[in-house]
Image 1 (spheres, one colour):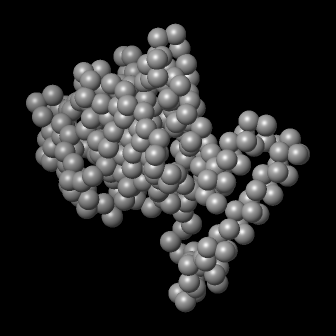
Image 2 (cartoon, rainbow, N blue to C red):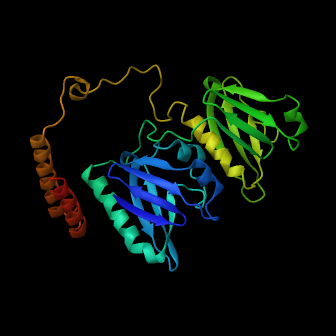
Image 3 (cartoon, rainbow, N blue to C red):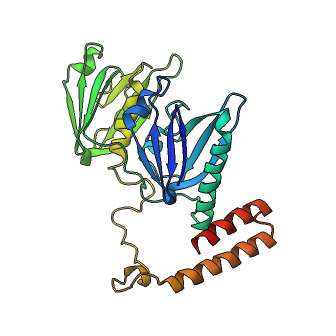
Length: 297
């Protein structure tokens, strides 16, 4: 196991899973604290990096496109402080952070995890039930229905229709935008058979956000709903299901023997040697990858 503990949080790597736990420091964002600990499978990662500064740096995880409903719902609009896949690292812990990065990169290389997009979410999204009050309303989501309730700051034309209850089956999409400068943000639901071009201030399927402390929490509502909608890269529902390869579909197939695993590791060593000779892997990358394979043997 590799682990790095900072005031900003704790990251631990167990070979096939990373556990990201937000810190309790006052500078840790409310969104990260509310989201809580994340279990990130290695298969969802596209890469990891360490950015070093004079006083502090940042560990950054890069996830495969489509792996996380939170990142899809927020569309890259989370600031660094709210991004759960970043960790502030103090300069005196750069050595530990570099070791942490090497361990993850070795695992990605050894398991041959591709960096391309996925067609299914590999993370579950925020837990439900979930309730957030911010901007001009409160959004409640229990996993099947979204309920929007208005407060005294809601525009009269929108509040006059009363609270809204949206069935998950009727929601086509959800989007979250933070407030930027003088432009307000919003949480908006697009509902079947009810398209609207009204600004969030007047849209009964939107919560308008003004940039206050709790506004980013609406991103968690968006992510929880997004996790339960069809994946944007999935084939249409009327497409025939893909046939599984015979090896994967055969229930009588037993686990690989130790001899088979040993042969697979030997083949992997030969592949690494070919990649090194062809210049794809540097000397350092080849050495680290080879050591990782030898440990498993």
